[in-house]
Amino acid sequence: MYNKRAFFRQMNQHRSDNFTSCNGHSRKKAWKEKFDTSFNSPPANVRELDDKYELHLFAPGFEKSDFIIAIMDQTLSITVKEKTEDQGNWKRLEHISKGFVRQFELNEKVDKTAITAKYENGVLIISLSKLEGFETSRKEIEIV
Image (tube, rainbow, N blue to C red; front, side):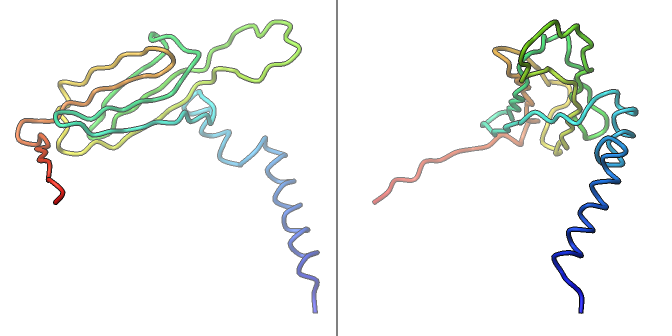
């Protein structure tokens, strides 16, 4: 008979020892080196309108020149390189603008030649126009 609690405590300690020795998860370092960014994933909202999709990416602390937006095949990629700034002599620092990579799979309805983007008030808004024939037709139904 073995003690389950002791077994799981030992396994968790073993995992945490392995991950802390390589600064977190074992693959985190490889991704950071490959994409030159950290694991920072800003939240995004997508809404569908009649003639387009709107992607709202909440990324405060950046300038519009920091964003790199690219399309490869059916994938929309938004990248921000990590800034190396002098943090100064702060007593408490709770927010640091870190780089990130976000990718979104596009469907066949999106017109890749008519994508526009704007950055205002910390929100990157990307408009993805729909192709002709894929517009959404709405009809209100009266409740009786």
